[in-house]
Length: 115
Length: 114
Image (cartoon, rainbow over all chains, first blue to last red):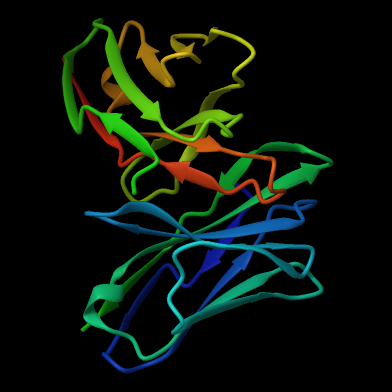
C-alpha cells in the first residue's frame, strides 16, 4: 500500500456520461497530481493542486476538471465521456518543501472504460 | 512534442544479465530525473532518481548514469531477475516553475527470462 488511495478501482460507463474519480493523498503530502495512462500516449500529466489551489495544468481537456478539498483529497471530474477517454487515471502525491520535491507516490489507479 | 524519449520499447534479458534502458531529453531546465517501475495493475513506484550535479548513482542492483552534455541518462539493472520483469519509465522534472510536474518517457517493458 503506497498510502495514496484511489477510488473506484474500476469504472464502466457509457459515452456522454459524467464520472468522478477520487484520490486521498499520502498523509502529510500537500501536492496532488493527476495523470492519464493510455497504451499509445504513456503517462500524460493532467493537472496539479497544491494545498487546495491549482498549481499547473497539462494536457487536460476542457471536459475534465479537478479540485482539491480542505482535507486535501482531490476529485477529477470527467464529463461528456468519449470512447477515447478510456484509460487508467492515476493520482500521485508529493511533499514539496521550498524548491525541493521529494518524489511522487502514485496510487493504484482507476481504470475507466467508456462503452 | 515528446520531451523525453525512451528506448527500447521492449527488452528481453536472460536471468543474471544486464538490462539497459536509455532516455534522452531536450529541455535543459530539467533538474531531477527519476525512474519508475510499474507492475501490471499497480501504479508506478519510484525506483531511483538522480540530479544533474552527479554523473552516476547506484542503489543495490540499479544504477543511473547521467550525461549532462549529451542530455541523456540511462538505467542499468545488474544481475537481472525474473522479479524485475515490469515496465520502466524514465521521467524528468523542472522545479523552476514551482510545479514539479513530471514528464515521462513512453516506457520500456522488460522481460527477464530464467
